[in-house]
Image (cartoon, rainbow, N blue to C red; front, side, top):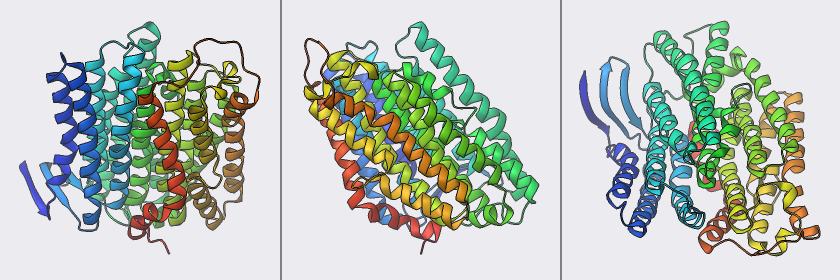
Length: 490
């Protein structure tokens, strides 16, 4: 065993930045008797993390790499900087302070208990997400993946009632079972085949295994990365909706499901390699699993009246777009999947922020209760409409570009059926999302009292993330450009 060393540039910045949220968590505990200072510490840690992550972009092509510890040859704890990982780190880092501001308003106005514990584990979860983003090999990725599961479980069970405990059990059981039973064996198998676990441009497994082996191994990874929520390992996600709304935003937009989607793309690009997946056809069986998940979750979402549950199944469906991108096995689709991580994050966090604002202002949780509410909550439902249109994939919202690249990728792969799946998925999104703002703005209002917008600490974040959905339409090149070298885009 050997201790860590810097192998290129100022690579020590990678574990240091990943540790900044831990410093924020420690400050939260230290200031637990002073609520305003505690909340300020959480917010400042988020701002600092976002600034530090953004500061890495000028060095993204410098090959920064830091080995913290080596257990055996080829088995080490290594952090590395590359565009795909930094893209995910940016999503987590930038959305954290926005979510922290939202959480302050939500936790206060809904008189949530155990707020110190909430802010502590929220910060630890962000640290785990950054660990995953900067992982330089499969071992480091797997450890970060498990840490994220353990850090978010107390958030899922935060309310402490029976529903929360049940949701937490489902959450923990499914994610740990899939990761230990499928993901870990896949990592070990890869280490045996390739004599190492380092992420390699072009793929670690190229020429190291036959088609049958690659097919089984790819399935182990995609099912083992349970945070990607493929059928039948998706139930943890709707079960986790018992958590407070800021946690739902964390699960669906900032950290957990995006960690799953990122891990799938990372494995496809740096472990198998796009060319190897394409030539071997090893990804095709999982392509059909992704397609079934995409359509099935969309159909289920239409049937759900509970707003957060409907949004949860929407997330399952939209995650399947990213998995489908990986299985199409071409650079255009992979770029669409990477971009969808960003566009979906901005849109879905907006939708969950809106759901929490509706609950806080009107104490309503079901779609059928929202008639006419848009007239007294125009900012909230205006933001909801913007985010919904982005997820559907229409201009001038950012979601149109990721959907467009996915369609081009399916066409390039000659997958006519998958083209249809992608289009039908967008039609399903129309059916489960757009009726919500339509009934809120156009139906006669139901008799209610005490209506109005939620507190500004909830409304400002959802307006900011809705604006981000628009900005991603006009600024998409800034997101795609760094991926050119990794994915060899034209």
